[in-house]
Length: 170
Image (cartoon, rainbow, N blue to C red; front, side):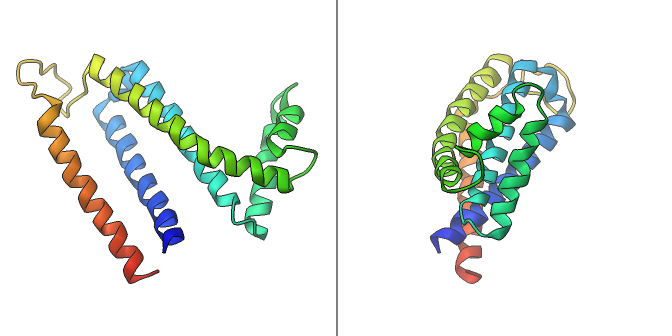
């Protein structure tokens, strides 16, 4: 059940991230460059973490997925082949690659959490956009307790849905 929670939780996390990015594009949040770029970095880090988690079962699909995707790095001029060998931990995809991917899959979420804190810091500095795109400093409400409560309710609902999904269909 732990593996099912982990796999379905990752999928649910991606759904939430894609919805978040979609809202950011719709509301024009890309105008706040620092906040937006930190968010893009977070998205790439989450994608890298998910890819490394995909490789960890070490079946045929994950082995060849690791081989093909990591070989894409060899297209980078001058650094490509050295970068591929560094990611592999040797000259081919083998146990050293699996160890490195496990380590990165464990460490990257902590880096993502730190980047999310930086993302929130920049969001606090610049403020967020609204559907109308107007400056609404006059009617601004504080993040805590209003949005904290709303986000907490959403978190509880999403976690409940995840647990229900995993218990009904393990």
